[in-house]
Image (cartoon, rainbow, N blue to C red; front, side, top):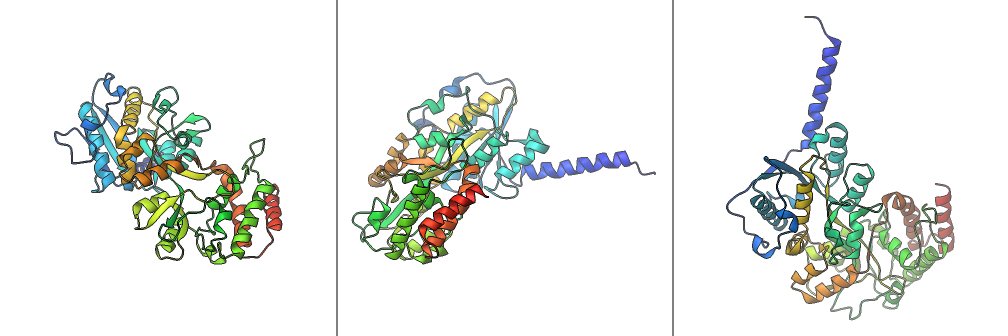
Length: 434
C-alpha cells in the first residue's frame, strides 16, 4: 500500500484534535442528576427563596449544562464547600427535571487550569467550553479581555439588587460590562493580638510610636501593601490618558513613612525576607510580632484565640483596602441554554447559600445582608466595616507596569540602600523608559 500524504495529514490533525479535547475535558468529570434525597447540608430548599427565573418555561428535550469548578469547590469531595455545592446543584436539577449538570474540575492556575483550559478550548474546540465557570477575579479579567466570556448585560437584573457591596459590583465588571456574578471575596486586613494591642493603629504613622514590628511581605512582587498606602495618600495609577502613572508626592510620602518606620524598628529590614502573605500569617502565628497585614481568608481559615482583625493602617484620613474574589461567568452561546445558564448562576448567587458557600471557602460573602448569618457579631461588624472601604485590584495591564518600580523602591528604602526622594525619581523614570 502506497503512502498517501493527504490522508496522513488528515489523520495527524485528528490525532492532535483528540489530544486537545482530552486535555480540555480534564481528568475529573462529575454528573449531577435529579435524586430523591439531597445530602445533608446547611442550605436546603426550605430556607432559600426560589429565584424568579426558575418559574420560566424549560426548553424542550433534555439539556446538559457544563460547569467548571476549581478543586476547592469539588462537589464530590467531602468538604463544607463541596457538600453545599452538591446539594445546591441537585436542588436545581430537582426543580428542573429536564436538566443534567456535568461538572469538570480544573486547577485554579497553571497548565490545564481554568484560564489555560478556557483559552485552549476557545481556540481549538469551542463546543467543549463550559456553560458556567467559577473564576477568580484575575482570570475573569483575562478571559473577558480575550473575548472568551459572554456578558450578563441585558439578560439578568440580579446585580441591580441594593444588597451587593460596592466592591462586589466592581468584581463583576470588566471595562464597564458585567462578566460575572460575585459570590465570595477576600481582602487585606490587619490581624492583632487583642491581649497585647488595646487600640490597633488606624494609620501607619500611628503605629510608629508603639515600636512593635508591623508584619507585611515587603518582598511581595505585586507590592500590594505599598500600592494601598500610595492610593490612600491620594496617588493615582493612571494619568488623564489612562496610561500607567506614579504621583511623585504620594509615593514620596509612602517611602518617607517607610524610612521613619524602619528607623524605629516598626518596619525592620528583615521584612524583605517575606514574599507572600501566607508567610506573614505564619510569622504572626509564631509570635514574631503582635500585628500583621494579612488576607482575611488566612484569618478565617484559622481563627486564633486572642486574635482579632481591623482595617489595615494607611496614610489617608479614611480606610482603604484591596479586594479580590470569585464570580460565576458563562460562555454558553447555544440557543435554549443561555437563559438556563443565567438562571443557574442566579440560583447559585441568592440568599443564605452565598453566605454559607463563602464561609465554607473562608471568604466574605459578596452580599451585605448575608453577613447576618455570621454568629460572631464583633467579627461581622468589623468585616462589614472593612468591606465598605474595599476597592478591586486595578487592571492587570496597569499593575504589571506599576508593580516593579514600587517593589524596587520599597525594598531599597527598607534596606536603607537609597534615599526616598531618589527612589521616587528612579520609579518615575522607569515608567518613562521601560
